[in-house]
Length: 308
Image: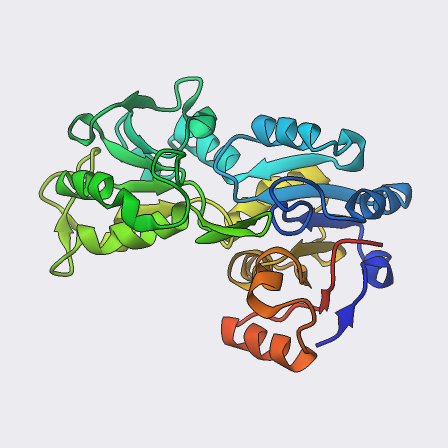
């Protein structure tokens, strides 16, 4: 696998760029060195840039977070987040999984993620016994972000009532500075066997309770990469229909690269964020090729960082 120093060698092959945020554009606290300059170089060449993130909060919230990091809005053309897509699906109720949901949600996650439920998308209730579904946006400050086990009692309470889970971030982990923390996907992994200790659990009404059996995987809906459906609103923001002219850049083979591949986009593997944590500062081309092969993805190359 080729390892590029920056994106300049491939930039002219594409008109649109889909960039992951955590681990590619920033480290959870500040933009990586060279990122603003790389984005400025793309924009100066007339390229379109959209951020696609599995963040479990709406796009307006993510935009304000980038403002606080000092990233100029002129450097990108829009944001699509898992939280934004989940909010739209909760509002529309036109997807079969969402059409079955009642309005009341038992929330696991921090208060900052509640934009997902705003404008009547969901009615939050304090007890799983009152809920129609479990809204999982990830760890909260009280229980911490390093072990899913701290959330077991709340998940068990939801499982006792057969609540379907809306997981608004398929990531299992993300890097915040030098710290690897869990995401909503890690809670989904813990929840799934609770729903089916004997392989299946009764669930079929709008609330997830009832007499119609559904497999446990049908009770958990994950919104975000690697689901190729989340790339449709990204392409709308890019204003592009030719997917051959769009490049996705991400640090996770499991979500970023697999999602881009499923959506028919070329992908470039950023060796920052989770990739750096897993493989170090200077992984060999052979190692990266082996990891990509094991994940079933074929990026066009790897890049040391999002820089020009």
